[in-house]
Image (cartoon, rainbow, N blue to C red; front, side):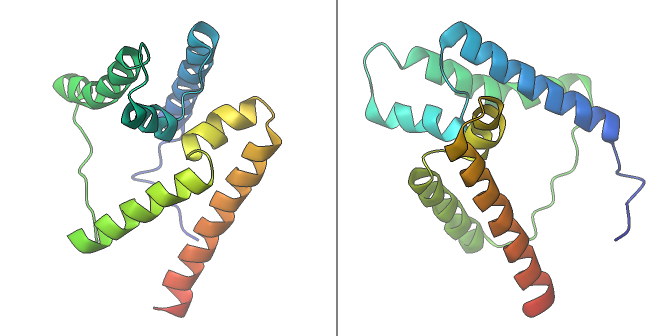
Length: 143
C-alpha cells in the first residue's frame, strides 16, 4: 500500500471528524435526537406534525455548508468513475440497506457508537465488512 502524500491531509481530516462529533453531540444534547441522515430524511417522508421544520433546516444546512465554504475556499474536484445507471442502482441499494439496518453510517457509526449501542456496533461492523468484501471482489476477483 502506498500513501498519496499529495492528498494526505491528517490534520484537516481530524478537524472535520471532530466537528462532526461535536455537531452530533450538540444535536442530541439540545434536541434529544440522533443526527442520522437517513432518519432525518426518512422522517420527512412521513410528514409528522410539528416535526418538519428542524428536519428541513438540518438538510438545508447540509446543502448550504459546502456552498458557503466554496465562497471562501477552493472546493475539491469531484470525479465520479461510474455511469448514471450504476449510481442510481447504488443509491437505491444504500437506501434499502439503511431501512433494513434501521439507520445509516452516520447514525450508527458516529452517533450510535458514541452512545455505546450494541445494535450500532453490529451495524457498523456489517458496514465495514461489506465495504471490505466489495473492495476485495472489485479489485481482486473482477479485475
